[in-house]
Image (cartoon, rainbow, N blue to C red; front, top):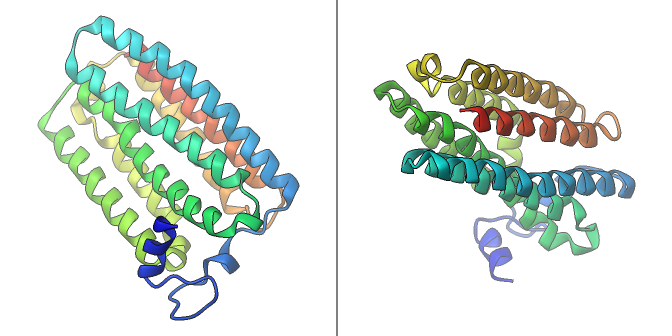
Length: 235
């Protein structure tokens, strides 16, 4: 498989030869029941994301503004991509180890991309010089994070949660003065959704300590993304 060959090129090896990281030993020790719940929870999120996307894109078209439509389109694409990849990754069994490892890369990368997607509708709604700078900073952090995941997955995984949260704070700051010019209800729901994501991060940190906490994390993240979608619809 060509994508698996690319992963091997970077020095990753399942058998251990010429390895930088043995990814199989580092796959989370989820039980079959947990993985079924993990896959079904984000498949539900995927179905919701299609419905949510249709609604906010249709509303954006009525605004007749290319920036607004672009921002919401980026959000929708990254949201759908995140839910879909998570569903596939968790749905794969360990008998399909090589493919599961590849989708673990894609799954983690999609989270970075969704952070860009979350910032986009708000930054492009009302553009300020400070918001552009913050948005560029988000892109830089995301690019660095993706590269770090590719070349040193396990080492970076130890700090990746803090890294995601750090980017999240930059995303929250990215609209800058634009926050004061937006619908106050939309702003409120954005921050409620963001704090809900932080609650999800807590459960994510318990993933390898308490069973089914990753499933709880999936539910919370889906609710948080729903709140952000509602916020975007109010802009």
